[in-house]
Image 1: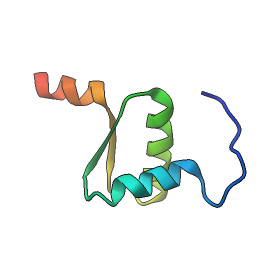
Image 2: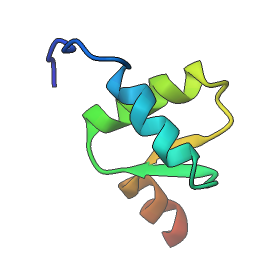
Image 3: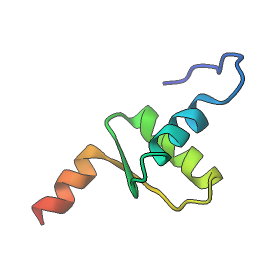
Length: 64
């Protein structure tokens, strides 16, 4: 989980978040703790209008 970023033109989390945001979804679902952290950071940097949840959270919400 702890890996230094490699040089590039943009941060990976911001690039991935922009791809997810371009779909028009209101929630981004992820399946690993690293992705959850990356997407949450990118969402906050973008204004926090898109929710980021672990797949397990979504399943648990639907079971209520």
